[in-house]
Image 1 (tube, helix red, strand yellow):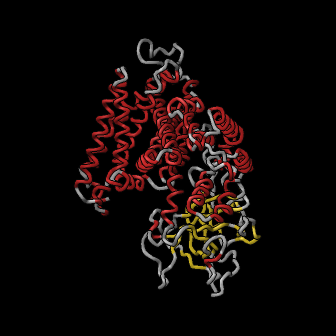
Image 2 (image 1 turned 30 degrees about the vertical axis):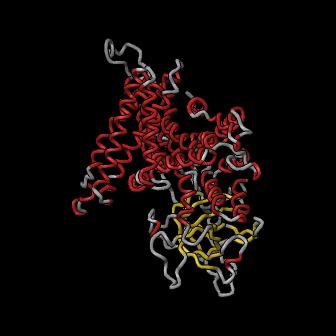
Image 3 (image 1 turned 30 degrees about the horizontal axis):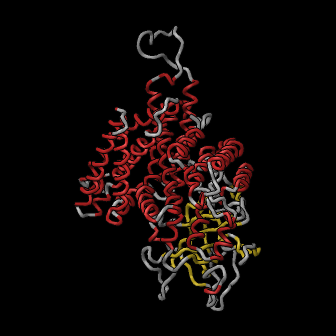
Amino acid sequence: MSLRGTLDFLLYDWLQVQTLSSRERFADHNRETYDAVLDTCERIARDKYAPHNRTIDREEPVFDGERVILPAATQAAHDAYVASGMLSAAQNTDIGGMQLPFVVESAANAFFACASVSIGANMLTVGNANLLMAHGTPTQREVFALNEFNGRFAGTMCLSEPQAGSSLSDIVTRATPDGDDHDTDPLGPRYRLRGSKMWISTGDHELTENIVHLVLAKVPGPDGQLVPGTRGISLFIVPKRLVDAQGQLTGERNDVALAGLNHKCGWRGTVNTLLNFGEGRYPVRAAGLDGHGIGAIGYRVGAEGDGLRCMFHMMNEARISIGMAATMLGLAGYYASLDYARQRPQGRLPGSGGKDASRPQVRIIEHADIKRMLLAQKSYGEGSLALALFGARLVDEQHTGSPEQAREARLLLEVLTPIIKSWPSEWCLEANSLAIQVHGGYGYTRDFPVEQYWRDNRLNMIHEGTHGIQAQDLLGRKVVMEEGAGLRILSQRIQATADRAASAGDARLASWAQALTQGLMEVQQATRDAWSHGEPGRVLANAVPYMQAFGHLVLAWTWLDVALSSRASTDADTGRMLACQYFFHYELPKIGAWLQVAARCDSTCADMPEDAF
């Protein structure tokens, strides 16, 4: 089945998104308008993105000392995306948006990720603007966020530093109030920033008039020292080019300097940078009377010390987007290897006459092991897509549901976000590896696209928080937060699906329901056993295998729920049922080994002496 057919099924048959039109926010929409959005995005992705995926991989960004040079196709794709209105698709109509459900927006954006995941990377601009809409002042929203939604400005997130990586408590970028009048600037409290930020995607380019950097930095205390830990972190808007209170460029460059480009194994079409703030390459006018004039000008968002809480608004959104990007790369590889397997003749089937070289060769899709690899890819990719869209549907529930529905959606999303980000990043990467395997020796050559899909996807286990960080967030915080409320609600949802399947009158569904219930009990017991030791260090030492088991349980639940909507006689429904069967027969049984080390807080890894390596 095509991507469009899969999306249609998941949106309309499984998630029933057409029913959202009964809610006031989406009253102007129906399936016809949703289909029109999907049609438009599918067309742009096919015409402007897909033909250039190999080009942007070969022609990496180049810095000529003054500006970053990108292939012409990147500008054309960006302009087409802006013209489509998708940057502001979920925003209110009074600011130029469509008030589109987030789940439909996510499905529409899937076409771009499948066609060329790194040619645009517009998710950061949207996430940046959404953060400012939630935490910025009215002027900050008007000047920065709205100009990101209309495509004039682009946006970034600047968290990591060369010496700190993911350990944000150790950042040393500092922000000093810019003069005695710094609190009166119409764009927000004005500061001077000095420091360096690493791994900044879309950190410099000429695709837009301006780039809005959202930068984490620490404000020195009265003694001039930075506050240790994360409680001293604040958030600042640092534009590449300075603007006035009406959003017009002043003609002055802010002191944000490109120190270098990072050359990556994948996502090569997305510029990735090291940025220096306040190094003096672009001196900015001194605004205060007390001599402060060194550093890049930044405008504080929210209160001092509240930066990390604000930034998590964008980080969580980016994590869901990365999960979708990983999913679509997995599916792109699946589609490519499926097409190859249907055309490539090789060998003969075992059994009678299997070694008779005079007999014609069979297409490799007829070999059982090729079917195994294709089924694995299908189960990983389509299962991840269903989970990602379910997560997006929870966002809509948070914003438009009843208070109880919104609370339940929030807690579910808290628990599921680490899975939505990490599971596709690991298992759709495995799908890409299997796609290479299906191609055989051709798979690792650049004559076929699957090696690029693998390279692109390898970054996603690191993007927006590594696997280890997601696992510690899941086991160390999400499953125990609010006395386990999120895990309890998820468990109830999983059991409800199992109960429906058990009573559906289908022996296969009943057996899968039993396996799902057993898996749920094992995860619940392992969670209790792990925390019964009362030693966080020992518990979190095995957070990754716990997350792997937890993720497999969630994907099994997702597949069983999808299967309950997939019992018609079409080829597509048959394919979904067999992908579900594959997951329950081949994947869900793996969780026991993962849970065993987590439950008993196995200390093998934690106790390994450095010298013993």
